[in-house]
Figure 1: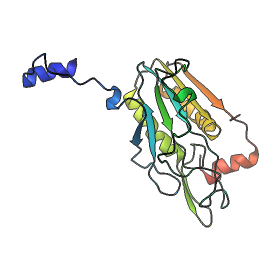
Figure 2 (figure 1 turned 30 degrees about the vertical axis):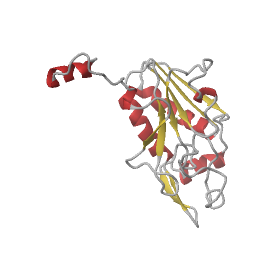
Figure 3 (figure 1 turned 180 degrees about the vertical axis):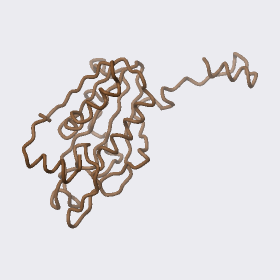
Figure 4 (figure 1 turned 135 degrees about the vertical axis):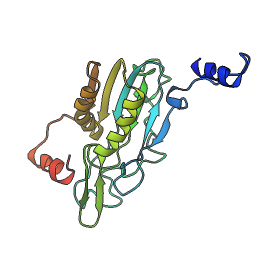
Length: 216
């Protein structure tokens, strides 16, 4: 082990000294919550964070969380159930089955590194604007938050064998929007995009929301 070799040379450690098991990315097994930092932010000013489950193979699944949207005073109001406005201890609650269950032998991503990007901006992970909705101003910064998470992925997984970009509902639109950029970054790497409950078709009014409310 390289680290042990340096320790032996510099500190004179013996081969009998216990060596800590190497942790992928320096993270613990299971889900790790990482602070977003930088310019990342949730809709009402709370801190953004994302989750990483280290894998044992050089493959990565990048998942965008789903959950509604907000575009006006009613849907963006405090207490609105149109979207989730924070990342908290309950963000992963109820999502630990299916592809999130990395102990399940039937999970095709069981051994993959899993990136879970929470959704707290009401803009399908695509916005970059603080918008005044009358009684409330919302930080529609989904693109910023996604960028912070993807910067971590690019730095720590520079040359994966395969990538899957996925999401459900609002997360599906996030996957659709982000996949071309991820494909461009990982040029030559097989990248597959899977969007559930997000058909990628939008009416003119929706396009106006994307352009003028979220600046996506």
